[in-house]
Image (cartoon, rainbow, N blue to C red; front, side, top):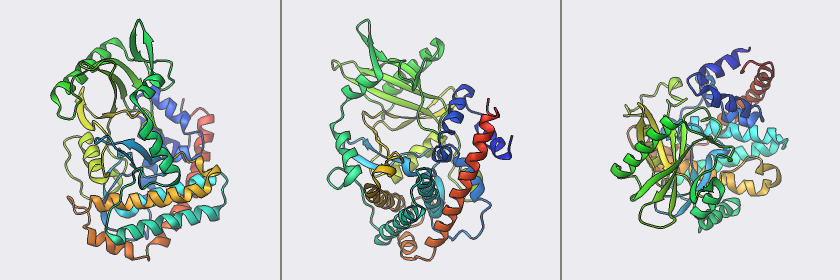
Length: 400
């Protein structure tokens, strides 16, 4: 087994063994999926890099890539397109976020056999729009009225979607009762003792938390699989039914939290958060224009979890769209760059992050851009090489 695979196994050792097997299998799909599942390798390698240009400190989501932007309904019931994964979020140099994102562009284009010159143009476009947005010093948001292209289609679909749509997709009717379906490949059965504890816990959260929905009770529970990097964490999906409105249901996701993959590899002093869940939702609320519905934290069996409503539609940009819709992706990359800068502007000047004047000055200075692009290109080639090593080890049985 290679040193690379030993690093991967060590990082994933604390997670649920049976679910980690599914993660290891998912990471064999392609180099982009491998990159999504190995955020820790990116920051471990970045910590030994030299000549990275200085950049202002900002709040970062930490795992920015093409598929970590998406559409969702906010807690104001309106629809937005924005950054949507904050598990790895910390205070760090702005360049960390940019290099993670740029690398994802190069890997995605290479995986799909799109010409390197097109990947380079997209990376340059991303930095151009990011810098221009910072230089203006004003955050933007993307909603149906302002969206274009693919993002507009996503938001229109999210506006039209209803709870009934997700009910059809994720539930079955049994003895005149609606319950979460175990036929869904992402759903797994929860044992009786754990199910009983979870039900009591969420019912108590509903009754006592100001973030919880009023007049609902838990009707069904399953273990839920989602994402790539988070496979192996404990994650549960709850079907809630209204106690005062007929045939009214909600879906609530409860996801275990662990330390950010960035943290061991940055020297920046971090806040002393009460729990990892508090870190995640606080930074999310700072960086997003409007946060997802029912966003909250809880502690179950001495472990921290993030709670939020499962959306009827939560589209993310699937990197395979790049192959057939290259021209449309130009607009999407432009949007992603503006949203990255906007998240940093929105959270600027808060508990250690750079103020807007510093961020604007960084945006006006173009001297650092080529350095980040060159690093991302080289690191994308390394990811491609690492993926081949991983695939060989996986086929040799190193992850059984």
